[in-house]
Image (cartoon, rainbow, N blue to C red; front, side):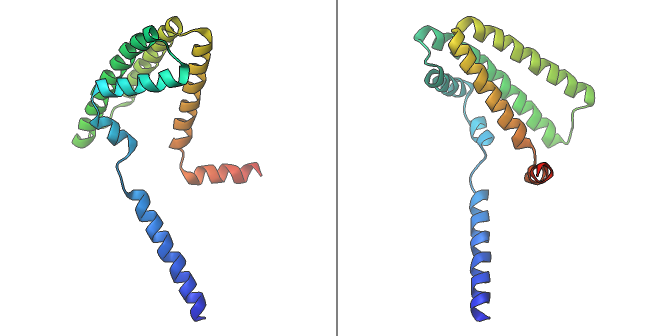
Length: 154
């Protein structure tokens, strides 16, 4: 009986320690907020260069797009943060207009990328975009939802 209690206590203490470690450190978004728009654009361009094997001309053109996006994202994040701290929530109309603006921006970027990248690079870029969108979408679901769906499929 004593051995059982010691084992149970050890397991419980390991779980507490493991959970505490997960809470440490800032989130990825918090780290990105501390970077300047130029730093974000540079990092994004370098990642794309590695992934798509961009030449110098493409790097310069994509850097301009990434810089523009980073500045826009930074201003939107700061505005949302200020509203959240003030306790304001966007209305349904504001959400729809923000979503429309975001989709228009994505369409514009896609057109620009199509002119800058070769066909193979563009295909690879689109696949990466779809993969990231899928990760974001699945990340929004809670773990309980995923388990429930797995159970329903079986």
